[in-house]
Amino acid sequence: MTEGPLKLSVIIGSVRGGRFGPVVAEWFAEQAAAHPGVIVDLVDLRDHPLPVEMPAFGEDPAPETAAVQARLGARLAAADAFAVVTPEYNHTFPAALKNTIDWFLEEWAAKPVGLVSYGGMGGGLRAAEHLRQVFAEVHAMTVRETVSFHNAWDAFGSQGRSTGPEGSAAAAKALLDQLIWWGRALRTARAEHPYER
Image (cartoon, rainbow, N blue to C red; front, side, top):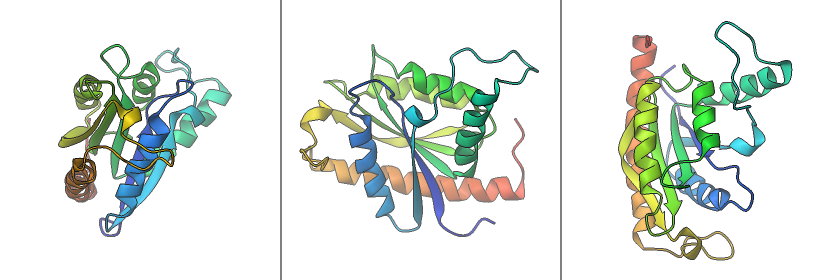
């Protein structure tokens, strides 16, 4: 079925204590939910802890890990597109986000990814650019437009509302427009011609 609303998974990519990611992710999810034809699934990686040590090829993970993998995998598989909300830690994205990407393959394949970054003066842009390389390897495609918050903690009020540059809502709309176009196009393509890795 290639008709119907686009299912967008908005992923909170940091699990660090005191993280700012949920504020940015909830703001972006609100922007997405207001966009016609989009159903948002807000995914917090903190709720889906996966171990860094993965099982050897051909081996099954421990039962508790398999349960987390199955639960998160089902949500990722159901998505038509992803928006990854990432901070920048030491000039790149968080280890927990890389670990999550590595645990899955088919769930990402032939789907578009939008990048929403935040940080200090750099606004998380180096993390976003590194993610482009990683998502290409798992056969996902990142869209050109991004949303970036420089000195993010100054860009949101006490209620999590954006008080930052006037262009933030416009940047979110541009990113969402591209995600929706690619999400629909790739959903149709996958239905007509199953993607082979």
